[in-house]
Length: 413
Image (cartoon, rainbow, N blue to C red; front, top):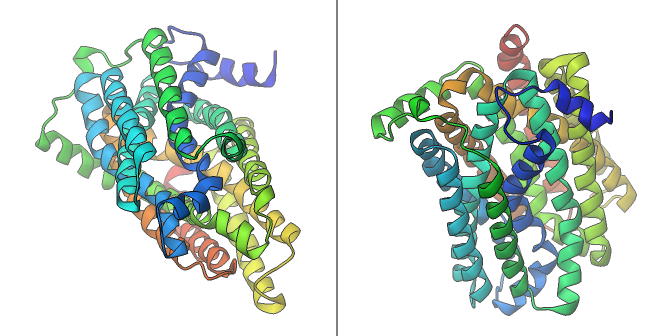
């Protein structure tokens, strides 16, 4: 048996009508629409900026976080809706809106129109993304859920690993607008496969009425849970640092290190670091458990970031490229260990309201991360110091929250 097969064999679902390997791939495809929409366009940002006549260079960064704004808005709709009408229909609705957003961005002639399309893409992508998480929670729980989520992240992390290179290759042959047509086609393929192969996982008797009272009560229950709230805050802080990187990465490698040609290679390699650590997480869970992995990942991330900040203050704000890449690899390996575990911890006590809980958790995480990420990105000043300082401050805050609030609950849960 291969390593992947061993992990899948250990993660026994409540009921599984299709092969587990196919379930992982379908869920990864559904959740990767967001990553695909972000990372493929990164090499094209300068060209898009010129074609849309964007005057201030940092404004082109908004094409990335506006996707997350739409994503956060969509969570409020699709999560509760999936608890009321089942998991499959909201995924179809979200996919249709995503396709419309791609068409608008493809035809955009100015920045406001482009941002409208991006908001709709994020709004639509939130349907497959958040409902897939609830669907996974229908099928798995506890460590089994964490393992499956880690494997899913390992599969769809290949998207950001190859997407920038794919985007750059497309730019050699076609206009950047064709990228959005590719997103549109891939969304249709993923939705068709999902519709044909994955049965509904939420039976009629388990569905909850779609009402403001029900949504507000269960949202309050989620956001006041002593485990879910701090886990969501910690994940929001960590993801905020990552959004800051996504927003400014193209400018950093182009303007600071003058190596735009190799940007897809660097970006893809670092994405593989996240994917590799996420896959390793599915094996490390048996030995260490979620609490220890979260704790030590944050400790390492905080220590490395603080040390690198001190290094920059002593030796200057522009280090050798290899030093910067090593730093990012260290921090991103921690990020890969954190995401699957934090999401599983946040959802574990709320399986009976998984749809609304996923929406509430995702919305709060999104508010925290987008606010932080946009702030870090707009602070870009031709050096890497704003990014590294952001990673340092956020990892310190996340570690404090983990050590003094979250750790004592999940270590005994």
